[in-house]
Image: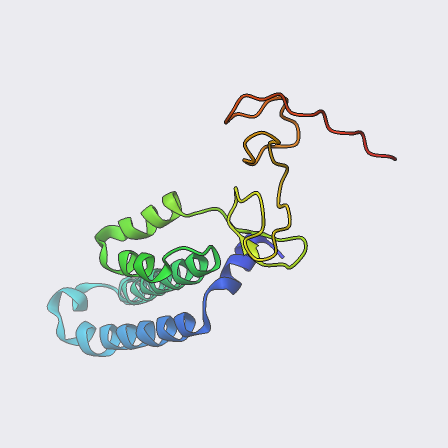
Length: 165
């Protein structure tokens, strides 16, 4: 499955229901109430009225689904998802949604022992204490496997042992 398909599966069912219901109501009101009575709308050709109605439908649906995605993705990443959802809804011009995508935390890593999600950068699992990544023997902070020195204390790291093939 594509990444876009996976992202669509994250959106809660409630967001889909609210989005489709609100879009249907708005489209129906535009098409049957506003369009026949408004003099500006009556001058538009039928294709123009349909484009206005269904364009509004699609924009509103995309906005509701993006807010649902912010809610579910923020929850999945262990962020303050309620705060980000409110920001996405209330900050105008979709700036709240853009800020979410610019400032969101990375996905947590799963502990290899107990499968508890832990934030990226944690050296040890907060639940069971299993090592999540290599640690500096001097300061205990996390290091990458290819580094020769600890970036925090400067100590030379032991060279990794070659794995048997």
